[in-house]
Amino acid sequence: MSARADGLYDGVGMQRTMFLLRDARLPNPVVLDLFRLTSVAQHAYDYPIHFRGQLIATNVKYDARTTMQSALGTKFGYQHIWNEGGGSADSSVQITWLAGHRYYSITTAVGSGGSTQVIFGRTGAGDPNFNLISEPLMLVRRQGGDQVFASVIEPHGYFSELEERSANARGVVQDVRVLASTNEGTVVEVLGTGGLRWVAMVTNGPASATATHRISVGGQTYEWTGNSSVTGIR
View 1 (cartoon, rainbow, N blue to C red):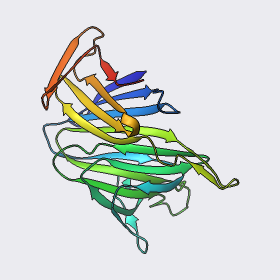
View 2: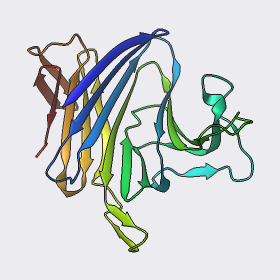
View 3: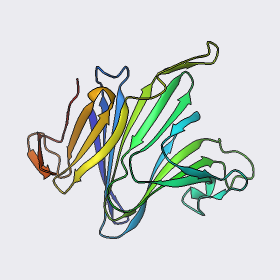
View 4: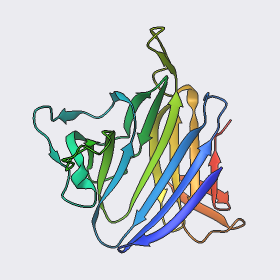
């Protein structure tokens, strides 16, 4: 199942396609989120991940601000986010958190070229009356004209404090890569343990259920019919 939305804001073209994928190798459905932005001008693009729960693990090497904090910005809502630390990444960014009795992981492709900044924050800044609910977030920031944020959100495992039992605290999905993004379409690869490999393909042109599409990259040709296709699902 998939859904797509398109828009234009302040000279930036935006297209977002979301899939709900079910694979027999995973105990729960996962969400694949493809967020494409295009512009002739350079921008700082932020992809925020708000989550409730306890941070369990991340592959980002970060510096934590444990003695002094400041707001992430002065307007557009950034004035209400504490900057709690951050780092940089040159591969997929992944975090795992615990909410209730279940673990959740999000794996986000960072794209090729340029630097990727990862910021850890928390709502509650600029709030003298303490009305804001304090919730953590991770923000992936990229500089450029065109950008694709490709993410997989995966629920997995079980945790019980009463039983002192934890199972499958690590997810199956290990890596997400943007293979191509052109006016024709976007191709994304998802890799996981046990040989899991999905290839998601979406058209970036006008919607059509019958149009055929072809993209060649790295000596490989990807073809699909319609607005989107995902291969490798079992």
